[in-house]
Image (tube, rainbow, N blue to C red; front, top):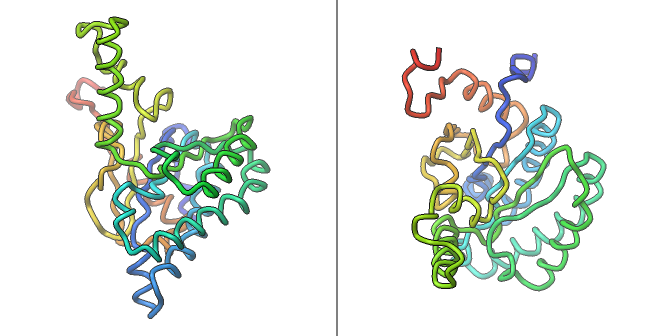
Length: 246
């Protein structure tokens, strides 16, 4: 029996964020190179996207490539870019079939030209879809995102279009890559690591965290359902007491 039957669709997180970790270790366990793990991890991405859309999740953000990932060996970075290019090209039809819109956060202009061109094509081709937003964090850094937002606000102050007194959480929200997207209620990280790795540092302030030992290529729909059920069994107080919530 699938765990899906136990999920309360009335208490579904509307935005789930995922740190896909463990591709390299999974490949190493099988005596293969790291690229093999990344390639196999694409199937887990597909399963997770499909499962979220089926349940009714409205936003799914997946940490695909961080700014720090450029520091990996060049052959791995090159292979990751080629894999990203190939995957985007192959998935456009499926995204449209399932009414899923592709979006990105991060400094995508720094991606290789061929990858960027294919990415923008996919974004345009799926722009009218409404069932769910699939948001890829590409060349993304939470610290860089906040730095960029603060610089933009400082520029607005210099130009006297806003004042220091105007600065509040809503203004900062509006200058982030995720402007207009609700904060994630649930953040999932695979592979057993328990850190944020510079991911959505502002947006995850009140998210529920779910860490699983499962390596990303082994992550599937049932693993997603486990995470959602864990989320649904928690009490989200936002600084209040249990008694206040009742």
